[in-house]
Length: 164
Image 1 (cartoon, rainbow, N blue to C red):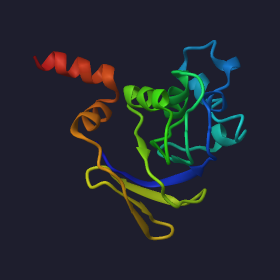
Image 2: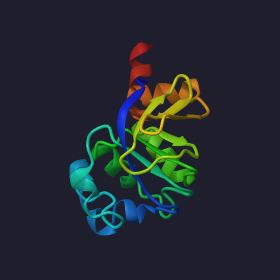
Image 3: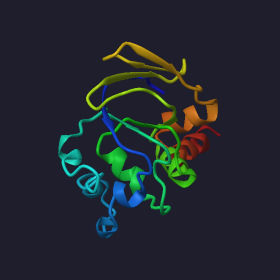
Image 4: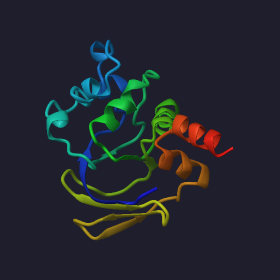
């Protein structure tokens, strides 16, 4: 999986639930871009119009709690977010994110909105390029890296099926 470089930070509080990530009233569509147009709207109404391809979300504890809404990580990824870093994740959100190829990193880092981060997945290092602080994270295991490199678990399955 490619490292992430020069990614702008968007910060969010503890306990961002899936209804905050994408409100239930928008779940009538299967179009990922329609979901992305409303992602994080309840927390930051300007997020979807200002987030850029490659930006990163940094949040507190229990990100993605609430329902098992599969559209939540889809909306985040479709908005162009390259990774989510949080102190902890709800288990179902974490698994749903990995399943679609959205990197989710459990880490307690110091970053403010607008800071610029670099993530070296293979080395397990996040650098806040704005403050020059470096944070060690547990490197992702080989299976997780393969899923993310393939763009999700379905793509990994199809790749492995073709190789046989």
